[in-house]
Length: 435
Image (tube, rainbow, N blue to C red; front, side, top):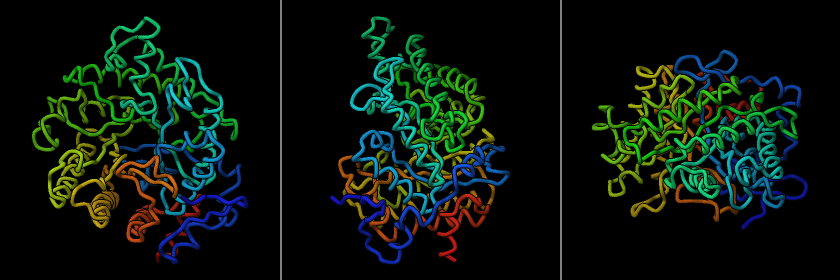
């Protein structure tokens, strides 16, 4: 394992291709984006119909997931990985990073118990936002997990059960138990009104935050009709907007069609996908939801399918949702997770390149035509020495030259269509080199 950051602030990753060394990892002082005053003039991302907008200009996104940023910022010995990842992403022209703004119960918990917060972890989140701001990266912050990792809805249900006030021990009571909904609303309000101890800016007033995500991959399988989850989405999205009218908001959906949508028969992976209690169109139509989210995991959905068939399905899946954004929702559709597992029996690294390129080409065409396909976030990126936090999808992007090239080419070709913000000097520098 390599130590990522030396004492003088220089980055020393091992790159397999010399042409990128000088550009990707230069000293922090070589490219200072702006001073704090200029950072404060950063504009909020807005929405105009099916497009994200920044300063009146369409904003199509090439970005990534690094769920671990807050967790690593708690510990001084792991903190350098956070600034290294954000700087590396910025120098690849990536403009949005999706990360967890939750850790409920357990090790390094942000919310130790309902209404009790660890200031040390809150300051770690402060650091993530301040570092992203410094490097010109915006953040999509997710507020709770449907899964058990980092607490999730299971932890909320356990808290209510332990206090003797829970209506049910079912994990899905997260969506309908009044006590649990109060827990979550208190958490949301605490976070959105938090004043960053580094920048002095309340989260709800900080344009570094691209948007809030209500939940990572919400499912309510105890009510396949979808009514329970829909009621929760409408209630919580409206609640967020009473506190924060500056930021965009999304649900965090995987993109499956529900039992009343005819696309369940033609586009869903299989019949199970319509019985999860979610519905892409219905959930995304909630009035306070600004954009739709979709995930792309063909090898999880079709474990026995040939790779070429998976690629064909990816195109069908994406185009269907972009069509929905345009004709049904009049909202942007953001593909907030996509990945290809390295555990597939026929896996080759070159398959990932083709998988990424398929997705990027569809987003690029959507951008050229000013359509609803608003961007994509790769799941997931790391720096070296983080194998313990990786899954079967994560990559260190500069370890494979062709992958790095595909990612950075996408950044530049999107930028050429709609222009580069004057504040994004990293992207400007990258794309000048590509001309």
